[in-house]
Image (cartoon, rainbow, N blue to C red; front, side, top):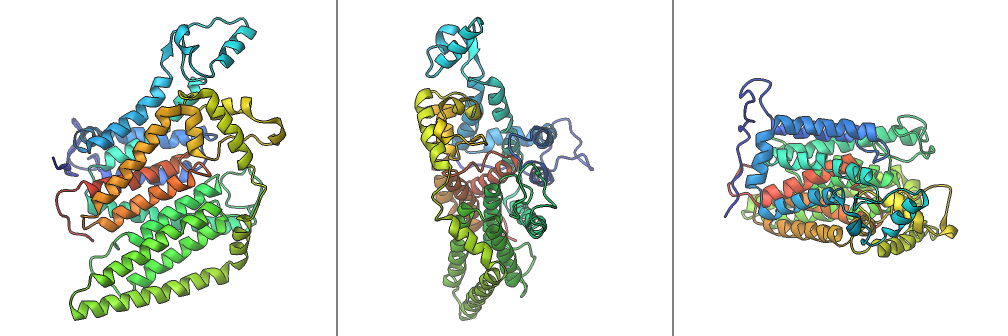
Length: 465
């Protein structure tokens, strides 16, 4: 049966229906994205900053109860099942089990030996080797759940406004990053624990996360309909100028994965321009479409040329990093694969990688810094959640592919495919990094999924803007 979407006018039971206290899902999602952008780019090490984002999300959920429950009633069954399982898996790892059960799980001999060394009783224990870390991992899902559930009641055309907010945040990230680059990393830096590098970090602690966030902003800038009531001659130059700035920002991060992933929005932008040109029917519209495509290509060449002229050294340094053969991640992956075998097929518990990996880390690969992450989210997921975690990841990838296919029938197909492209970029970067290990990117990824699913499951037409 086709999915019916609730009106944005629905309000939470008991909440005022008029005035400033009326639930406003659009403003709530925008607020949460901005708070996540400012405070949520640091990852698990910055608990207080993450707490600010999560408390904001909980406040939004409390005030938008009707939207939250409506999501569980009206969203596609496949989406609800995957969301529910994603919440259930970390919960199950925290459930206390009898000693006879948890001691039989793979890798728990380490716990038995540790308890025996201090003469501590076994008793009931959770399946997770560190339940506190698993609780932290579970709390990290509050923000994406809020974006998805509360945002489900937003009309599709208004989701485009939220998308342009993400683009605006990308430009803010670029502006802040320019100060970081020009100062050599000594000013405008939010996370001061790392050495001054002169790279563009924006509001993130990891430049790879900065890079994939900027790729998401570039994708939306290239594919979203412009927020204009009528066409304007400056619209195309403005769009391409924004895309050029975001592309320059990606280069300034010197993130190899982001540099490669930038090809996705560029290819989709050119495909959309060709689609517009090919879809022109009348002579007048054909001429107009041809001029738009020619102007777009010309301006794109100028924009890319400007980027090359402004940062030739940065481009060269980024390209040189592809030839580096001393990447420590290769050694981490080798040890992480062994650790995954130790805990297979159940896993050590969500969020426990940093604790259990040190047991299997080879002495010849040790450095002054801890690995912290597997730098491959799929490998880390295998260690933490085994078959259940990898099955969930496969389910999400299949859902994204299916929703992208369904979205092809909608008038909002390009924004929806933009959301799918953002999720694709995240999935690809997860092979060599951990883009979804901070609240900011979790919020952006949840919005990309929201836009894709809302368009793919729409049943009524809305005038695009």
